[in-house]
Amino acid sequence: METVRFDELDLCQEILRGVKEMGFEEASPIQAQAIPVAMQGYDVIGQAQTGTGKTAAFGIPVLEKVNLNKDIKHPQALILCPTRELAVQAAEEIRKLAKYMHGIKVLPIYGGQDINKQIRALKGTQVIIGTPGRVMDHLRRKTIRCDYVNTIVLDEADEMLNMGFREDIETVLEYIPTEDR
Image (cartoon, rainbow, N blue to C red; front, side):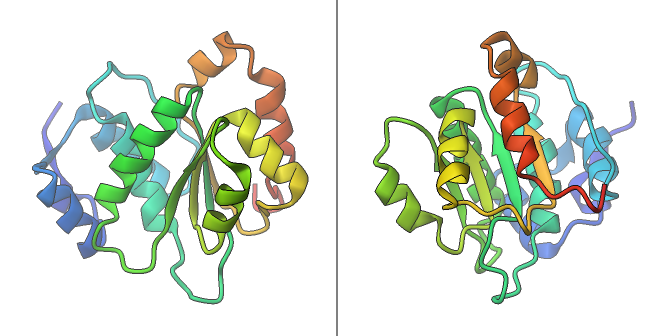
């Protein structure tokens, strides 16, 4: 496969700066294939080895799609991860990509963390990365509203299914608006 440079992917300058600061110039195969398709609004199922940049492959299109309009103070992207460690790791990676995007807020949420502290931190968050159980807790409490969610990512979906999260994932998906699908 021919190498693709990030500056050939029609990304905003702020994300390109973040990518460059992270030391990347060329997209990995999963990134080169997934980013353009996801940015066009298509569903993507990606599979690649650990360490190939899957988080950036879905994180960059998520960030590109976030509307930074100050009037939208609700989540616009929801990323489900099987474990708190993966949620924290994905949030760190996406924050690095978004470093130069002023006004963007990325928040990991997971069990074992004070839910009241999370509720306060959720205000103004556009990108939520969380474990299915904790996301469901917030959805049921109405501390996460999905009216503006335009993207949902199932990070390591196979692992979540192997861990028995199918019903939880289906419950979360019921909260996502589908009129644009």
